[in-house]
Length: 437
Ligand SMILES: Cc1cc2nc3c(=O)[nH]c(=O)nc-3n(C[C@H](O)[C@H](O)[C@H](O)COP(=O)(O)O)c2cc1C
Image (cartoon, rainbow, N blue to C red; front, side, top):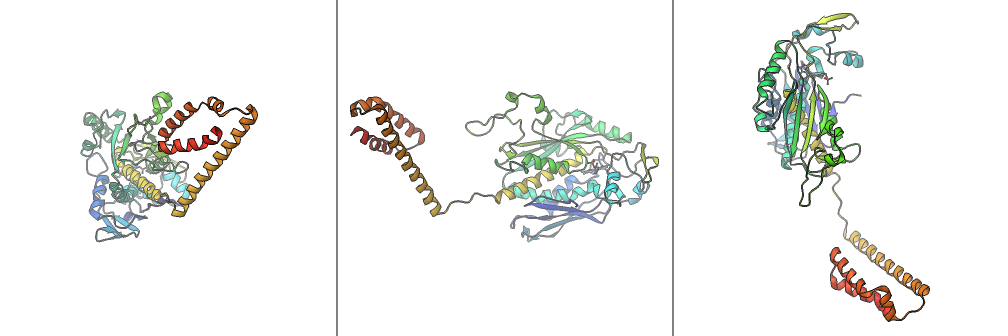
């Protein structure tokens, strides 16, 4: 069973291989009437495109998004949306020497073990090029989320052990490595260039923040929001770990340090959990971090085996990213957008059903019945008390039950419950009358 599809209500299916004629996505479940055109999708495609900075793969694909279906006069129609991107700059010859060899750290071996046949050109379906379809779907999902004021922003916060100390998302958009901190970006660039010049690669960490979150998104058990996000993000090639909020650091905190407290006027004191508790969003920003491995395809000679099990050495040519993290930022944002669009759409399906007029009347009857039952119980207990204590005069009874104290307790309770004072006083008098009589 293959799994090229993800999501229930906002469902995406990606298709295409690195060196095939096109890659793309089919998106089903998008509500009609959403403004959408190719230019909106193109903005995100351009953010993912390689060959822009000199620090990524020089493969020069224009990545022009073509919308084949589901849009009419700039609006979604409710029909499946198919978006494709045609590939133009592929050189399969670069990969000829890899045809019968398993690249270390790649999916070459495991793919062949599973399918017995392999498209060896540029990684085939395992290539980062598959993520074109994800980013196109993310652009559509973002349109849905924009309407609810939900904004997603990602940036690189660590490369080769060099860590960002600041978060400047606007700056990250202009940085060649999408680094969130202008102060450490030059050192990160130096590390990436050095790795590339040595025929090597480096890893990094991406942070994704989602502002404008609504509380109540996500299901509490198997579709926890954090579980859904982690599964979607781990489905991106090259991701080796996901953290939410304090993540692994939470394991070293005490409960008194970790617990997030809601504040009386709304909002929260802290956000150690990263925006979801019990698998359901709290309305706080979502904060996620992704560990990105060093790129598998490196120029340095590496020992491996061929498909006949014979030892061999390979040097990988072709065009690769010496650090995957900056390339993966728009892909990770897109996956978060798809999960949230799916969660929002599923949420619409569980909208509370308001009772009918008959159901309201029935509920009020139930309350009256409960009142009568309580009254009957009270009469019963009073009679039992009289039997136990013997007949006492009404004057003595008042003393026994502490009438003034009872009246003021009822008045206080009525205030707390927001009940009309007069109504409560009248009921108390009516209940007490027989015993006073
Ligand atoms: C946008 C993007 C670009 C990628 N570029 C490369 C690349 O140039 N070379 C490479 O070896 N892997 C690249 N990868 C990672 C591989 O797809 C991934 O490492 C491979 O499929 C093995 O999967 P795994 O690392 O999750 O085990 C890229 C991934 C993404 C998302």
